[in-house]
Length: 404
Image 1 (cartoon, rainbow, N blue to C red):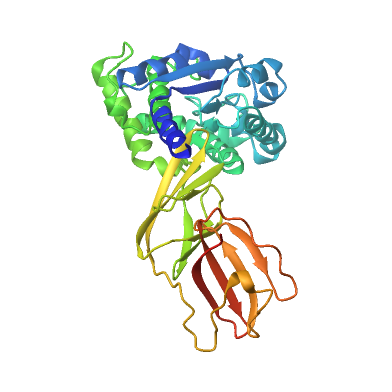
Image 2 (cartoon, one colour):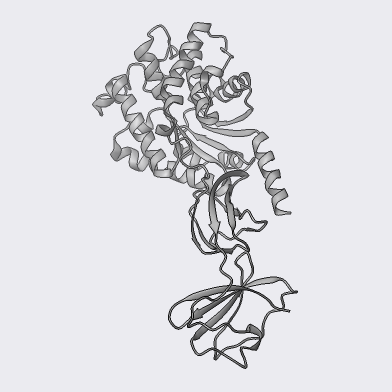
């Protein structure tokens, strides 16, 4: 039954729709960025369901105090939650950013993981204003230019992502690439701050690439931009995002299967090393399986076996396999070790025998005995068990036994 459930999970996760919540302000709401992300994804045969929770000029602090934001967060099982700060706050000096912005970024991510534990947080790295932040220029000179403001935004958004194990969506980096390579594309509206249609398209292509991990050149929807402008923006997203997904931490927090294994004759000792998984499942290749992360499995015959671990989290699965060689040793070969009848240990206990243990063939421990502690043997329904004897010279031997 467990194996049937496994295949159902694989099938379901392959076709489920990806759900994304955008939490931000007018930079997210402009030109309806979430709607655009869903539309361009559809043109590339990808299904993204995008919803927004926005308030004009909202800071991360305001969202952290908003019942509406938490209600929206709890409304669905999100796959991604995107956080966008007020356009200026991440660009301020660290001394101000560290108390005004960073604590609320951490609080919001903690809330995401508590309310929507299967959601991956993403920080929407915005862009420097076209001519810098002239209002705050005198107080903090790096803000006097686009380049200075943009670099501060990148530094502090990166810090928020690093501190919270979140993805960083480098929209501002894509904007910078476009500014540096094609001066004909105007990314700003007349206020020099909010995104034009082209600016929002650049953001949408960035999010599409981050979330689907696909080349944005598969997008065929130009969103009423000229074909040449749309193509240039898609190529910028490819150059900055798709060609460097690991730089933005994409995939870093995926469920990854992993285990270490040591064979000793017919016995496999295995230890789970998977990451970002809620549970694991082992198929030992001999008809037996286990859901214990760590344990011992005993094979019943000489052969090569493919051992596979399935690591799960939130309906997603990753697998890894190894091939092991089982060498069954059923008899005690050491001359100093006398064979014995386990059912008559109460009458004859070998002087050099320290303890006896019984296991099922998949490694479950059933029974142990010493000369001074000899419990009643378990009822086995005539099934094969493995008896392990531990001797006074440190040796261990195994043999198959039937307990009637």
